[in-house]
Amino acid sequence: MNNVNKDAIASAPPSVFASSYHNNFKIKKLQCIVNEEDKEESRDISQLNKILKSATLVSGDGGEIINMISKKKTKLVEKVYRTAHPRAKEELFYKGSDGRWKSKNPTFSAKSREELVEKLYNFFFSHTFEEVYLEWVDMRIRHGVKSNKTIQEDLTLLKNVFKNEPIAQMQIADIKKRDIKYMFERWTGPGLITRKAFVNRKSALNGVFIYAAENEYIPLNFIPSIGTTELKFKEPRHINKAFHLEDRDALLKHLKSIKQDGYTLAIQLALYSTFRVGELRAIRYEDIRGNILTIKHQLVEESVYSIDTKKMKVTKAPRHINEKLPKGNSHFSVREIYLVPEALAIIEKAHELNPDGEYLFMCHGRTINNDTFNERLRKYCADAGVPYLSSLKLRFTVASTLRAAGVDIAYLQKTLGHSNRAMTEHYIYETVAEPEGIENQLMNALSIG
View 1 (tube, one colour):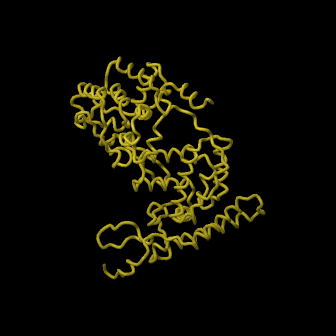
View 2 (tube, one colour; view 1 turned 30 degrees about the vertical axis):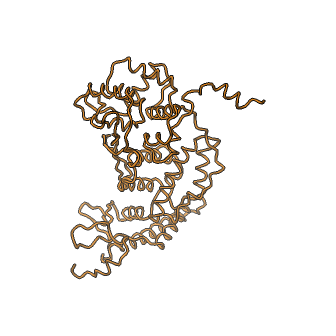
View 3 (cartoon, helix red, strand yellow; view 1 turned 60 degrees about the vertical axis):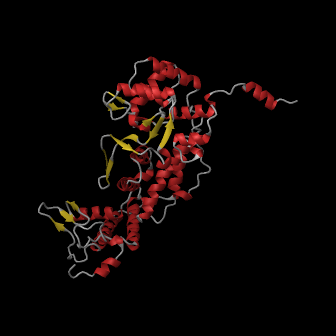
């Protein structure tokens, strides 16, 4: 590298340079550096803006404050911009042939120099909660740290919850503990949302503030320090986690009586073993050896999201099917499942209907999908005269039925693909059937003499 101090480049902090080389041995582009002194100056400008918006100004003072703000912003922007352009001439920005004022690294354009300064100022110092939230989600997408399902949940929370709050358009550096505390109190009230819903919201909020602190938009993340012990939560609605034994029998009887296809057979098999629906969809006929099925994969329908943080625009690509390792820790979730004779008969019927399909359960040449699976399940429950429970509850049903029959919980943990016993116990629904002789048991246990 000609006339370049290599040692100086090697010792410079990473934040000084852009993130990639264009060619071998080329110097990375310098980035604009915002230091603590600049941030303090920005906070002073924010205070002037608050004064400008107040109703206590004497006539004529407003114009003076506007001019003061404009000068301070211009001086601050030029100072920060010059850190990435140390050799720039006196005029940092240039006027293009189209008459617009422009900057490079970062690249902006505007009708006037004043408007360009405003855009650069917002880029350097303006970070509303909504903007930082989208930056946080964008980071999670780019780094691949979360599933598309989690990304969708993050964006849904922004749209349905946070955008309706005063903090959405506040500068994140201006948000105080009391703003968050009041928001928590509005959410919960006398018991408006469940604890689980609250934890989901607080978790996203905490993630955003961690990201803001790491990027020095705020000094620290204070979300964990906000007390919540006095908040009141809505009691979760009691929902059966599993079909009762008689309901399972009635549903199976109905399913066996109607015309068979990929969906009817898949639902039946789900009532005989501990599959996740994604795993059920990914079964291939060659995964079965004798009465043992090896669970190797799951099929997941996902939409890919992309975020333009400058335009604050979220783009969602059409859903597509991905084959992945089973959910959870693959050391446990890739597993062998024992198949009872009824389950083997269902598999043989599915293979007979679909001998050349890539997957065992297909319908009209396509893999079965989750939405239709649940729609069909709802219809068949109604036809069989039993309460509807979603596809996930089929897995609960089999686990609970096996436990009620005396199957050891260690085996259930293995066949469910869980990494810990606590998760398996969550799947056990004790009221699948009333214990036999319960009245005599109670009398013997509680009677005196």
